[in-house]
Image 1 (cartoon, one colour):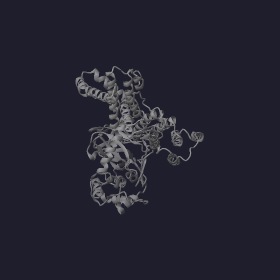
Image 2: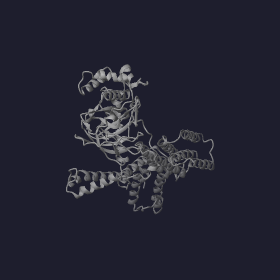
Image 3: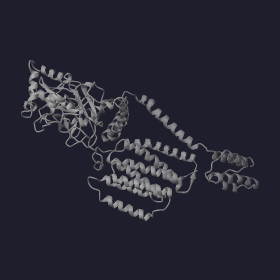
Image 4: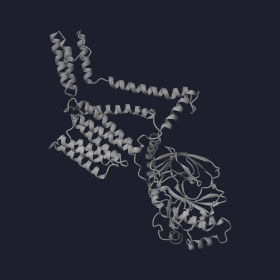
Length: 635
């Protein structure tokens, strides 16, 4: 036999730990340590039972905790102090001698902790904590119904499993209702409580300035930067354009936004549409497949170099639609030669002499092929380690170390092109990605960060990537094979969570409503399915599943236990003597109406033994049932 009180305490501690896990990332370290100390102290009191802290002392401490954190609330930090207070209050409640209302208050505090965490960040982990807490709360509420009647009530393990199954069944029934309410409840285009959410932690990413060696810091980070929902394309087309850098100071490239933008002629080529989910990375640039001609979104600014920016740095995950053209080059007629031939005054005579040597005897732009061959077959190696960081990093890269990462290769090529009279610029973004067939999207990591060169040839910008092919850093290699497959599998869940839950808004509700309305207004549905087929393949199976589920519930409800069967036998035997039990009539009331003294005495023996077993929560063993049947035979 197991006491209800003991199980309730275990569930309560599990609920509090679940609430803590949900907010652990957002509470301060001293709060976590205080919570752990109070938790261990409460467990010690539960085991030892040496003394009991007066409730008025705990209430006074709780009031001081609320007062302390109330003074820490500000416009910037509104949610965190509240979460800190709720967590400490839940731990203090564990120290009390718990009654019915105390268990209820602890469950409410845990639910508030979970809701508070969702105001800061509604990630897919929220669903895990929510599911655990709902199951624990439902189980706890059922047990509290017994606990409120008798605090020292004990039940057998089989009954505990039945109660747990009932809790799971209740959760299973409510889940479809939650989904329906999520879909149909009205939404706004702008989250009502968005002002409560703090910006997500900025991640390493491209900025307005890229110094030599800086991209290597991004490339060693394997966090997700974007997901692009699109069909699979050729590997050589996977360049994700983000920022164009046109000014070089000898060690870093930056964007000169003060110069006027020239209008861009239309591009010809195959169009690819992408729906991109971009993670916060601390800057304003939006990324899309190279040669993006359109990006939809509020506050998006387009530049003539096919880059797109927001008004403010990206601090929340954002979703936008991009259209890219697979054109070989970007035409430009009004070339700003000074802008794209700019170099620091007197920059590196050694590199200039090297360029003149390479151009000797080479006609036209053929020497560009010579430059490309220099980087691919001239003994230069890709590396993220021991990069040149002297006052002359490009000279050291070209003539001393002969190794570097993508920005060394791109910077060297762009500088040499400018020295040779060819306008050039450096483009920053990402190269490659992992295609998730299950979700139909590309997963791009920060470790895919890349820079390449665009050279002005034949009245247009041509992409030239001097970085050696198949250049991979250690982080990228570590993600190959089973590790990457596992990451893609787990990321599929995050992708659909962001797509169906986070991005679900009023526009999507209107689209669903419009699709349903138009489907029944037309003789055929948009996806080519007739109403008859819809009835045959969708509604009828759903109806059968619903009826089957209801039948199962009816069967479970009507399924008789051993005590019900033995009572039914007793009542049938009594009915054979002319005595029918009334509706709502107890067994003792029933047998008091029996006029035959001998029959009444034998019936009382059955009722006394039955109630002795039933009301003391004892098991109806074979021996007990045999004894009860023996009493029935004597009637």
